[in-house]
Picture 1 (tube, rainbow over the protein chains, first blue to last red):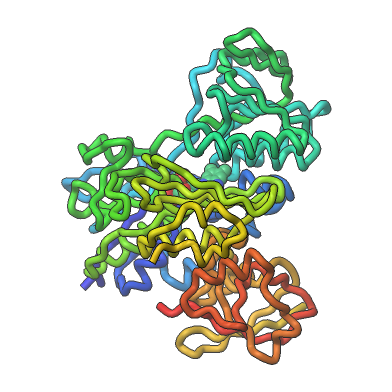
Picture 2 (picture 1 turned 180 degrees about the vertical axis):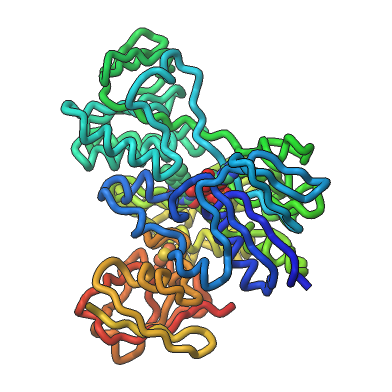
Length: 410
Length: 104
Ligand SMILES: Cc1cc2nc3c(=O)[nH]c(=O)nc-3n(C[C@H](O)[C@H](O)[C@H](O)COP(=O)(O)OP(=O)(O)OC[C@H]3O[C@@H](n4cnc5c(N)ncnc54)[C@H](O)[C@@H]3O)c2cc1C
Ligand code: FES
């Protein structure tokens, strides 16, 4: 059936690569063409700000799949090629090198790019980097090794900024994190967890300044001075900008696909155009468990949507209904998150030690999400409780002396 | 150098060799079916679940605390379960046999 058909995938990262292999596994007999403008064999992104940076690891040790696997599954990997345009009437994409490629089914796995805020001087200054791909890390490494003072300013106290700060600190840098909000991680977690991470960084010698809106980067050769709205200045050899992302949705919006905080897809990961699917960071999708539309930036979402898209394209009607999960590693601390805590109305902290605790988020007594610090047991039990919609006795939950398996109301 | 044998879902035996890194990486790099390694080997995803052959348990050792907790996400966890990203490849594990736990 799919014998003479071609499935083209734009974006060869967590979403696109997992999709291509899943499609073959689901029985797609036709061609699979996987295109990415990145030159590097597709790799894991999360380590870029963590172990990969800290241990100066090689990308070869972080590949999503070895090259032979693409050959074995007859997946054409086309790297270093940027897709410029989609022609949905003729079912053809054109590449920036002037060539074109026909498709029967098209999958957008274009993800997101780092956002570069409109800070005066940011485009002129040397040694200013975002952190989204392997090339960014190469730039950071080179600048780091070339700098004598190793004064680094990280703009943005989100997960990527904080992980980068931790990794560079371990490499011996003097690191300052500048956060615009009144606390780090303000958009993604509670003040409780923000404070924990602020203290963790402080204990490890990373300086965090909040309420700092960066307005300018002045540069003098290789030296930069980061200037804030309140007049404070920070000398730096190297600036890492981690202030969020922008969705790569232009290919989709140009042809009139429905856009709303990302490329809108249905529960089968199909866009508003029948033969075009979208997966991963670029999608705005419905989450069944929470009855909300969301755009997620996580490996889990990219991989799970990839599998759903593959099944649907091969005629196996499948609905995306995954429970979201996420992790972040900083120093020796492992944060694991399950669920979506947005709209919580209360939370319970379960303290099992200074460096081992969990935060449980509820709405109307329904468990929404768990943030677990060095506490995989809470993460796992939280996952099970959310899936089974278990009723939880909050008093017992808050009491670390009560076994986590005994906190249910039955 | 260590030789490691994986037994996949359809009973196929694949023997691979490695001298560094972890067992999940070795499996992925050799295209062993059923070992996904979605989190890249940091004990966060439980997609690298294997059963260690009973006789090899001494060589491989038991799961650490976080790993053992993560294994509880799996319905088919047993006393021989490990997340193989947490097993270092070295001479010490030469000759072991691992059965891929993933069912679908
Ligand atoms: C530093 C860092 C740390 C992270 N840490 C974690 C973590 O700990 N846990 C977690 O769950 N998630 C983490 N994430 C998020 C995770 O990496 C993303 O959610 C995941 O990569 C999304 O995959 P994707 O395939 O949807 O998109 P992306 O990974 O963004 O890939 C999109 C690909 O499409 C390509 N592309 C886009 N447009 C075009 C075009 N026109 N032509 C050709 N190619 C194109 C891009 O080059 C890119 O390779 C992290 C991300 C970063 C950057
Ligand atoms: S690879 Fe994720 S837990 Fe082993």
